[in-house]
Image (tube, rainbow, N blue to C red):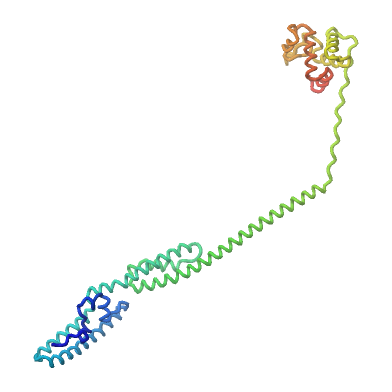
Length: 345
């Protein structure tokens, strides 16, 4: 029988089914030289070369098996030829069909998955860059490339990787332009703030200077002369007392002298005052105001405080009138001056 040592040509061409020697699809792919990063055209060329290599290896292995078999066994030449044919056919089939289906499915999904992940990462970063750049710089080129990359699920992995690289480069350009726009805006805002502060300070300084100049001008201006005090108008001359007073006037003269100490000078003012008000008539009545009696009390009933006969007794009316004058004006001449000035007392 042929030697089954692991270093034989067959063990190289056809790996063992031992789990340790064929643990993963990637190891199996590596054993037959499959490169998952190659394009379809390159993979086709690689597969054809591998087919030729496997066929050649199979021939060599058959030669080795046949040579050793002839020396160790008495099998016929026909049996050796049949075994050789089976080995060559098996090698050709393996080269033509490629890796095991489980291995091929695993390897074929790696590149698209990596392309999709790269696209999502690039799109997320570019979206933030576009949002930050609004109103600051042109994002049309980046937006166009982002729109193309957003269809990554419909694109070949090679195209996706190209767009990811393009989006990344354009995003860096937009980020730099945005940073420059922010820097210029900050400088302009600072300059505007400084200008406003300077203008405000200048206005305050000018206002202070104007106020100081106005105060200095007012201090230097000559003071206006104080107005001369106006001399009070001379009091009208006091009326002279009658030489022959009437009965009522005589009552008043005696009452004012005994009760208030007023002399003939005050009698003249009193005679003139009540001449003007009532003509010394005990029954005098002012229909427009209701004033009554010799002193023209308003209303006449006020004179009841001097006596119940106030309506008919001249002495009662005179007593009330003298008390009113003393309390309000001090003496008859004071009442007379008030009447001359305003028309009433």
